[in-house]
Image (tube, rainbow, N blue to C red; front, top):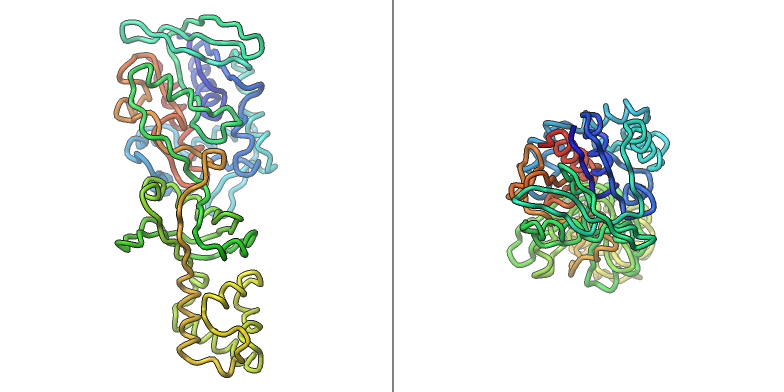
Length: 416
């Protein structure tokens, strides 16, 4: 039996604790917050999209950074294993659009509760309000931790045979994800790749975008590209949202993970196909029918059946068709200009919002120095990494939590 210490009481930390304890190890978990799972609690707007029910190819292809590194971990503990694990813990769940898996109750607290009950059943020792301040090692092997009581300020040493660092990333810092794990990794000699906010909204240049604040679009196709080369960086189909500063929503958040590094160097182009179900010829026919019904109306009053009300004034302005021009006077050239605009609605992306709005962190402990089968450090034996602290990330849809479950299981199942 080994004495396994765990730094961090989030998704990865709790999964690691349960797995290690089930394997007969003594487990002590340290969490600097006053309760476990603070970030898990707000995941999926409080509903907790805890995995994805897609096939193995869906899971693998949804990883943005260092996909191949996760191959062994995903095989060792798959998304189906995750669903089976929570089913065994008595958590009823449901599968929604995009294969996203949620607790049936729509309450993230039920996911956290299931994990806490299992830890208690397995006699996992949990220390809340306890911050790990130093990882100790000697002759290339982990020896223990220096921890601090965040209430009294008192410090003490805790010895152990193994350590799983599951401290999270740098996003939603109010939940305790303040980059502690990166510091520990660096002190152990590990490389930490540049840290960037990911799954985060974009800032746009166009001032007229503010007029669309609060408008949500469904079933649109989005493409992000380099305006200089025309190279496509990301494309997707689904929902998006206009905000007071730019754009957000599921498709846009996923796009940010692919664009994060590029947008630091240059502006990017967002192209929205507002009517992806129709090609230009079909859309032109649709517009013609609408125009026929509204032939005596002014142009600005003719688009109600085609577009959301909030979008109409902006489209009218961008089409350069005079707003008060009667429909029967609109030329074929003007109509085709409108069709092209609806299929290629463009915005200039100038940057990303910060870590406080980022769902996850891109970057982290370099996977070159971590064993992909066991998550053990190649530099200091007995030290393991799990979850967001690693330089791995995925798009939205439950994939990032699956990374947490899989890497935590790999680490805890292979304690040396």
